[in-house]
Amino acid sequence: MSKEVWSEIKWTLEDIMVHYEVSEEQASDIAFAVSNLFEDRMIELGWDVLDSLIQTFHLLEEGEDDV
Image (tube, rainbow, N blue to C red):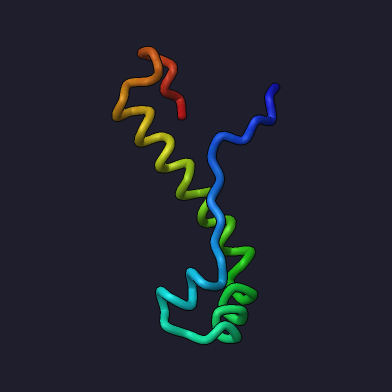
């Protein structure tokens, strides 16, 4: 089984700073507080997006869509 990575998302403190208009220290506190839950939720939502795109573009044969 291949371990090839074909999609990756990275967030930075600057993303938090700009979006929420907070200092670097505040952004760091936010990132630390939510890091584990954030990653778990991103994975969960990623599966939902993948399922939706597979269905939208009919990428599985009939009967294979047990996702």
